[in-house]
Image (cartoon, rainbow, N blue to C red; front, side, top):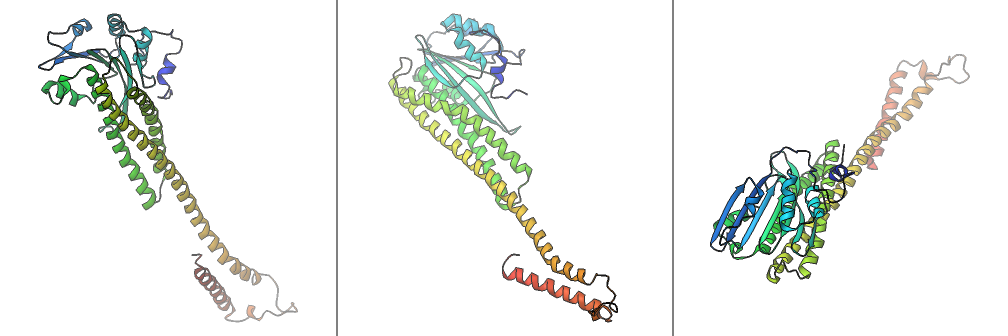
Length: 362
């Protein structure tokens, strides 16, 4: 089994640098090309069969957003690279779907790689996919692994001319997408927070079993994956809002600073959850140890009570005939000797139990 953290790196073994080659297993899914061309008083949305159609910008367009769903047709990537002068190594990063989140600026465009994380309510799992962006002066091209994203609210704002998005440029659109991705992290963290609280309550209220340990380890793996996906974003946004870029205006830089603040909050929440899960792991081990100590305590008390009883029964179990012995044991021939010895043994046991209880050992 290939770890999902190194899955695509393993599949790229042996390929030459700059190979615009499909890495996904699902090679027969159709690539969906969508475009939104809009201006302050204009919006046109289409689904294209050919990438060449998406390149055509209607009159009155101030911003074009071309979205590629499904990285299954390398010819589309090659054509985009030829059209806008995108280096094959950058196209390789887009297709590899596993590079580190980053922002790189080139002469003709800015290249942005992010991790979009969503919570699947049906299967109750976390889905993560790469979103790559090519930002130019008035064009934004986005690449996604599969259809479905967190950008529906942004599309609605463009269609209905809500807010300032129709009045702004492609840099504001890029910010809006980044902000939507970061906001999606909070939704996932809320779900994880509920899981963490549930496990914490079960550790305190009930005797934890192996299921609790498995849940803790699963969440710890998810925290590592989230930290790996979100952590670099904090660094690149921090560097971005302190730098000057010809593709992002100074006014939009302030918005990216707000996204940076949100990312810091996300990273701090992830670190808090990781610490809580580590603490819960220690609590689980302590509870198992305490449970074992309680079991050993009960067994020790039982053994301690029976030690003097065994001693007494051992004395009267010796096979000596009283007439031949210089020391007479009159209890052996006494009619009620058996019951008297049982009474003494019971009295000894009760005295020991009282002693243990007085010392709060039980």
